[in-house]
Structures are given as C-alpha cells and as structure tokens.
Length: 181
Image 1 (tube, one colour):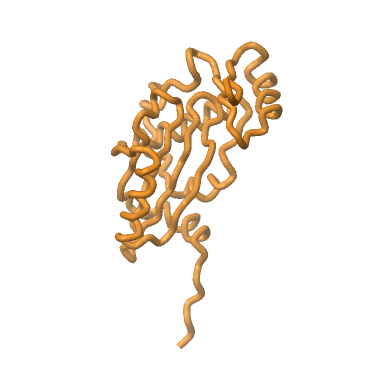
Image 2: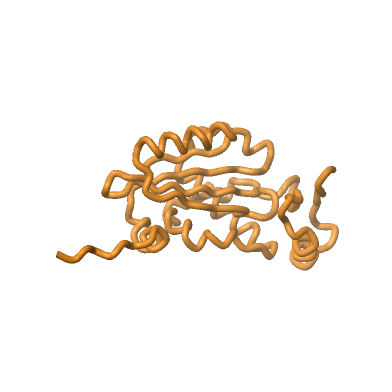
C-alpha cells in the first residue's frame, strides 16, 4: 500500500482553508486607543486540529503590518498558544464580521497610500472570508484625526515609507512620529 504524499501547510491553507469552519476570533484589548490591533482567528480542520491566523493591523497608516499562521494544533497546543499570545497582550472576543471589516478596511486604506499587505498575506488571506465584509467597514475610522499617521517602527524603512506618503498622500497631508519621540 502506498503512502499518500504530505501536503505542505501553506498548500493546505491555500487550497482548503476557505472551506473550513471558523472556530474563534479575538482582538487585542485597547486597539482603538493605540491604533494597532492584533486579530487572532482559528479554523477547525476535519481532523479536529486547528489552524490559527494572526493579523497585526496598523489602523493609522500601514494597514496589514504583519501576518502569520500556525498549523495543525491539537486542542492542548492550541490552548497553550492562546495562553502565550494572551500573556503578551490581553485578547478579547471579536465578532468575525468586524474582524474582516477591520483587516480588509486597513488593507484598502494603506493601499490608497501606496502600501501593500505583508508578504505572507498571500497565504493567510485564505483563512479569511471576504463575503463577511459588510457596510460596517465604512464605519471604521482609519488614520488619525482625518489624516494618515505614520508611527515609525524599529524595522521600518522610514525613508521609503515617508517617500511613499509624500507621493501618495502629499507632503504635509499626513503626520508622523519618529522613534524616541
């Protein structure tokens, strides 16, 4: 009897994740106040194991700043992962439709400014369901006080980001905060 070839986690997510049921969805507490939201959602595989997608959203400027997935957690590993994730920042339950509106709204906002989602979104986007986006997406405020606000991060290419903002938003039509300010 021949053994079935193993499919990579990336290929499984790209080809099958859209059909899997959602299990849970969380968002970082305090996301409104600081303009950064961590969204964590899980889907349950037919085997009973879980796939987790994480989305770091910069609501003020860059959109989807980071994303990753964790594949094939059993219940114990999934619970342990949530505990570790929760120890770094308090996570609270989040409505799936709202999570989708926030993720896709931030991506659209950033796109208009010339920024693309983090490269791994080509995989983690398959954990989402764009059909869940509704009119609530228009109710979410992106930017700060009506303008993009770039808060420079440690690993950002600051000159490239400011140049992109100058080109697409226009000089003087955005705010920025540099490290140490």
